[in-house]
Image 1 (tube, rainbow, N blue to C red):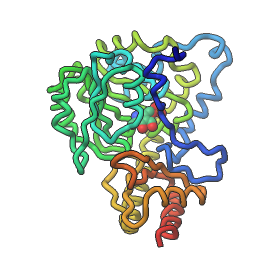
Image 2 (image 1 turned 135 degrees about the horizontal axis):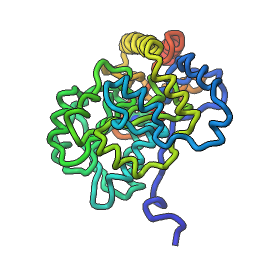
Image 3 (image 1 turned 90 degrees about the vertical axis):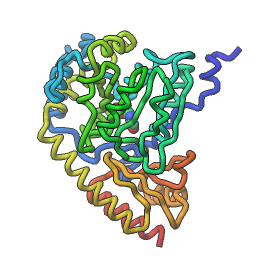
Length: 347
Ligand SMILES: Cc1ncc(COP(=O)(O)O)c(C=O)c1O
């Protein structure tokens, strides 16, 4: 007998993007924010008393829930904090799915979903997007206990309208989890649906728009009944005292957040135009990355050539993606170096 459950023995496991050990590289492979977190975060970290580390943290992270409620115009009991958005995904799979309760999601999308389905031993119903990344009509009819739509989608950067998401929530028999890890860079979001639908969970991350990927902090937004169900499954102390203080300072600093996300959006739109000028096919992105299809060189070759020059982007050897590169938006300067290097490689 193996030491692990059969599905774990069979599992390949999620492969996170490469994290280089040195800092003298241009790192555009894991959709981090190119800008520093708010100065208020540094202040909050400096102000943490050691006694706060001696004690367990607040299991509900109420300080953050109150700040988030103000930002989103909801109540604190509409929120559950988690150790990054990935923690919420794990909690949702554990709370909602099992051998007889499937998950469904359109593909290609975030490659963690199938891994979590295998860990939970539930069926994963994968329904392909069309060429324009429109929501597949079959999704609503799949009858899954949990349906996930990543919006804006990763790795395409495409966006499904709020109206379409509302219709989907209305049609589904089960829970709709809308993964809004990248919504800080989109013009619209689905948070308002929480007021209208008792089956919607919104996932938010502090890793992208707030530049806090290293902190590990995310949150769920939903009706209090759904939040109570998710809370039963989470670790009691899933977010630590330092993370609560830093994330609360970050979400409260609206001015800094607006300035940095605006800079990323501007740099993204310029990057799309520059890549198109180099004959890459690039759909409009609503996130902090772009998906570029190479027409004159294999994507894998470009990826390897960039890595040799210490520029890291993401290459997925997966159906529908192996001719494309996912490139995180850097600072204007980093993007300029990327474009100059790409010109050199493909000329
Ligand atoms: C689509 C999507 N959802 C959720 C996450 C989770 O983000 P985090 O756990 O850093 O909050 C990521 C991270 O890359 C992501 O790409």
